[in-house]
Structures are given as C-alpha cells and as structure tokens.
Amino acid sequence: MSAAAGNRDVLQNRFRSHLCGLLDTGYENRRVRMSGWMHRKRDHGGLIFIDLRDHSGICQLIVQPEKEELFLKVERLHAESVITVEGTVVRRSPETVNPRLPSGEIEVVLDDVQVESYAAPLPFPVADEMQTSEELRLTYRFLDLRRERLHQNIVFRSRLISKVRRYLEERDFMEIQTPILTASSPEGARDFLVPSRLHPGKFYALPQAPQQFKQLLMVSGFPRYFQIAPCFRDEDARADRSPGEFYQIDMEMAFIEQDDLFEILEGMFRFLVETMSAKRIAQFPFPRLGYRDVMNRFGSDKPDLRVPLEIQDVTDLFTNSAFKVFAANTREGSCVKAMVLKGRGTESRQFYDKAERRAKELGAPGLAYVQFREEGPKGPIVKFLSENELESLRERLSAETGDVVFFGAGKWERTCKIMGGIREYFSALFELDGDELSFCWIVDFPMYEYDEASKKIDFSHNPFSMPQGEMEALETMDPLDILAYQYDIVCNGIELSSGAIRNHRPDIMYRAFEIAGYTREEVDKRFGHMIEAFRMGAPPHGGIAPGLDRLAMILRDEQNIREVIAFPMNQQAEDLMMSAPSDVSPEQLRELCLKLELPQEEKNP
Image (tube, rainbow, N blue to C red; front, side, top):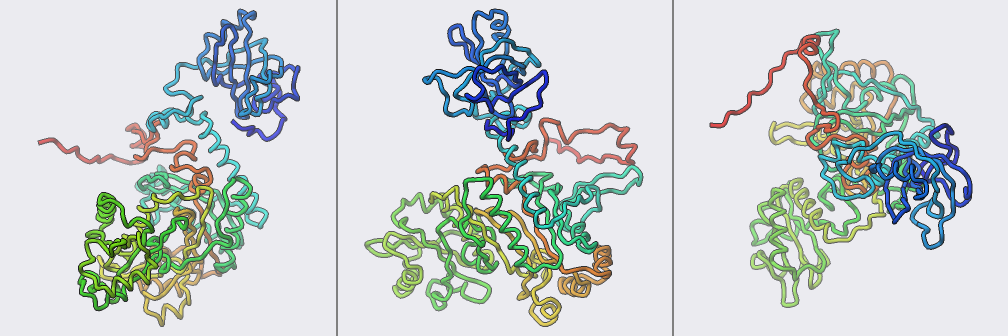
C-alpha cells in the first residue's frame, strides 16, 4: 500500500515507533518497533522473510535461524496474524532491492516478535488479488477491505470528501446536518419507514434526500449550504447505484442563477480531478446540451460523449417514400433516425443478427440497415428505396463505401431511446480513452409531458423547478412547450446528479400544479409546510447534489459502485456480514404496536 499516513510522525508507544511504508535508507542501522498484519511469509532455506503490512504500506522483515525461539514462533503463524516486531534497519543488497515498494531498499532484521492476535486460516487470501465470489467478499468484508485495491479506494474516498469540504468552505458554504428521521415523502422512490414507539401507528421515514430541508435553510437565511448527505431509497441495485443507502454532495445556494451554480460545480470538479487523479477533463467549461438536442443526437439524456457515433434525423428524406414503414413515420410526433457505423459495411450476417436482437430487446420490431458496398447498396430494405433516396442518404450522412447505416422509425421519444440503446451497444466497438472525463450539462428539460396511460398532462422531471418564463409562460404557452430550469450533470455516460433552480413563489407553484391537474387543496395537503415557508419571504435559490459514490467510482476506474463503499449491500439489499435485514423479537414488535402479516407462501400443486 502507498504511504497513506501522509507524514513521518507516529504515535510512539509499546506497539510502534515507526510505520512500515515510511522506512527507507535514511533509517539504516536504527532500531525500530512496528506493528501490523503478516501479509506474506516465505521460508528461504533457513531464513524466514515476512512482509509486514500496516496502513502506510509494506516492509520486509528477516528472521535469522540462529534466533531459534523466534524462528519457531514465526513458523507457526498464519498469514494475517497481527504482530509487533523489534529489529534493526539494514540496507538490502543491490540484487534484492524491490523497486515496487517505497521501503524496497531496506529490510528489518528482527530481534523480537510479539503476537497480538493469531489469525485462523482465511476464507480467501488477502495478499493476492485472486477472483473471489461477491457473496464471500461481502460476508467477510473486513478481510476484503485489507486488500490493496479496495483499501486504497476507501482511502481515496476519505480524501475526496476532505477535498470537497475544503473547496466549498473556501467559497463560504456552511456544512449543516439535516434530520435523518423525517416525514414520509409522497413523491419519488419508496421510503424506508421507521415505526414510532411514542406515537403508536405512526412512522418516520429515512430521507430520500435533504431536498426540503435544504430549501428551508435558504428561507432561513443561510445563503450557501452543503452536506455529505446520507440518502435512503428502497430501490433495486445497479452497477452505478447502491441499494438502500448512498451519499451525495448536497448543495444549495440563495440568490443565484443557473450559470452561477454551473461555475461553482465545474470549478469543484476541475479541482478534484486535478488534485486527486491523473485523468483529464475533455472540455472546460463543460458543454451544455439541450434535452431535445441530446435526445436527437445521442438517444439518451446521459450520453457518453467519447463514443464517436451520432444519430441523425432523416425524416424529411422519406415524406413521399414508397417504403411505407418510413413514410408512415414522417408525420408530426414521429421520425426516421439514422446512424452511420464507419467501415462495418462488410461484417458477417451474424454481426447484423446480433444487433437486431439487441434492437428487439430495446423494444424495436427490428433493425433496418443499408450497407454501402463497392458493388452498390445492399441490405434488407434496399429494394424498397429509390436511387434518389439512397443517394440523398449517402450525401446527408456523409456515408462512404464500406459504411453501414442503421435506421429507426416511430414515435419521436421511443425511436430516440431505441437508437440510443443501439449507439450504446455499438460503443463496445471503440477503444474509449479511460483517462478522459467527458463532462456535460443537460439543460432545458421540458416542464411537462403527456401521459398516454392517464391521458393527461403531467410533470416530466421535477415539479418544484422554476419554469423558464415563470408565470407568463404558464399563462400563455402550450404546457408541452414550457421548459424548466432543470439540469443534469453527466460524465462518460453516468449521471452524477440532477438539480434545479427552485420554484420559490407560491402563486407560480399553485399554477404549475394546476396545469398538471392538482387542486390548490391537494397542493396544500402535500406540501403545505413548504408553501407556508415561501409565503414568509423566500429568496430565489437552486442547488444540486452530485453522487459521492458515483464520483469516486469514476475517478477510481471501478465498474461497480460497491468497490468504493466500505460496507455495501448486495444486489438483493442484504448486508451479508451483519445478516441484515433480520428478524426482530415479539417483544420489540409489541413495544412498537406492530403485527406482522407476511405473504402466504405459494404451495406447489
């Protein structure tokens, strides 16, 4: 492990005078006392070599055969036993220097070993990063955390939090803790509920986010707030989402506009990247992409901009086409989309069959394509297209011989998403630069959308965002044309956070909810405390809350968020180490006035 201790000062007591990873040739011939875990043990024909590990790193120790009692004691120890050693630092011979270790030019000849804790045989090795099942790793997480990569991930996460605090405090942000026990929210994901002993039949909820509290802090006159906030949501796991709980860098500012927040956050991310990683930001300031534009070009509101593929609109080329599938989707609300894959026009049939299977998984009836070959255009739909249409396609898309064009047609949003899924599928064909961080802002989200299921207009994103144009927009515009001051920040295809300039005016809030079909009484019932606070003088304000876990995952090049969390749950939201969730006693249930009504197990016929 790297010298994570940071300096050479160590609390000197009976366990240690020095740290393993900080010893070098400057300590030659000095007596040292160290404590740690026996990382490895090697018997080399009479000499025993021990790699001793503490939080600062590893140091090699030597036990000489003439120290017979000491030799026998060490022989009996298993790896990961905890020992305290005393000895003398000596310089290694040139041929035995280990350049991979900061302490690799020295070793310590031992005079004494005290066993602080014997280790039983381990369920998996700590010293070697061999493949181990996730179930075993999570059951013995305390062992897994001793491994180099995971240990350094947690060290990195701690330093990341420290850097965030430094950056925000230097810009006059105040760290304020908000409640963990609060009221159940009628919006968002499922709540985790906590029964109240003092108020039988009533429940607290763990906060899905400190959203309302941080807005109330703005109303209270605190102009800049942040918190490394724990959030709790009863939702399923994903590679970039931990089930149950996660942490976010929660921020809110009063008297700001959207650009002010972007400047603060872009500066913070640049500071973190430059001081904590060897990665580089692709473009600064971060590009801003409107929601409709990003859906048209990438088929996703969280695009990985490193992927050199863009979707293009070709609807107008097929208005009068004999190919009815395309012609039928040239009306308003529908579209025909195309995407060029350079140099793949001569791939095997299997290549296209696999792509079509993926399109069907995404909800498409199939995947049309045209190959531009030396002998002319080929593909299942070529016979339905005119020469003029094929030439117009080639010109519009800058398609060359050897390229293939894939198509999607249908309702605009659905077609964009399907083509976005195909773009993501083909991204595996490209060698993306892992050191490039392609941040972008997604802005100008629509305030409303038409819900086909309920046959009504509803909020499309965040109902508490300020509409662009404020009350005038709500009174004069088609609701489906109204944009909101809502924004997402995305990095390499991963959404780090959503945020918004908030709606701080009760009159605008009532009208915004009225358009979505809510009465004034319903708004008061659900959000009365917020309305009441805003009536008593609320400043314009806005905020965001980047995911700490996701940010650490990106900066550490991890593919799964569990690798940057000290004690994560598994995909079934279980803590295998602590056996949670667990049963509770009948006495605990009685004290809380609760009675279980478990689902009946289905009986086999």
